[in-house]
Length: 181
Image: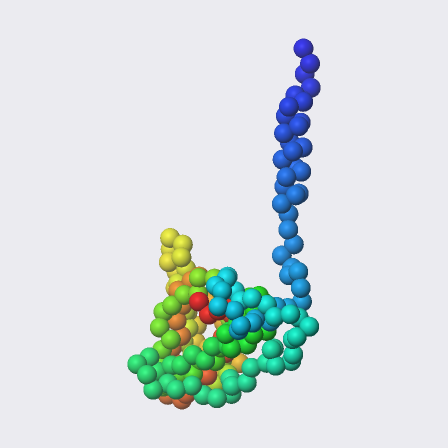
């Protein structure tokens, strides 16, 4: 009786190893950029690309985050989002940015970004921020931020921001997602 490894087992193991290598992929894009086209009515996960030869500097440029948003609403806050709809060069890059203005005691109520991690930089004022973990403990993490402070909200977690001081507040959130959401 042969006590070696059965040949069928060796064959299956080699096949499994070959398949795992065959399905490996490189997450890097296949092209440098994909400037979104506005000429298509087709719905895809993302936008169709213009020919890279037709790209120009303005495809990668947005002007307007220097202008304060209108905070005379119920929450006392305003989000000025810069995503692929406003900056075509963001298409397929998986990032977006916004400016959020707060009136005194303004609130960005609890919300989530299911596909994005958010990092914020406080440019003016004092901001009370927090998020709740999704595990069984449902821990609340909070911090009071001042000008120049940075805070991160992990992907998919419920979070909020509140201007706890009288002066107007301004902060800049950066999201690892092409659309805020």
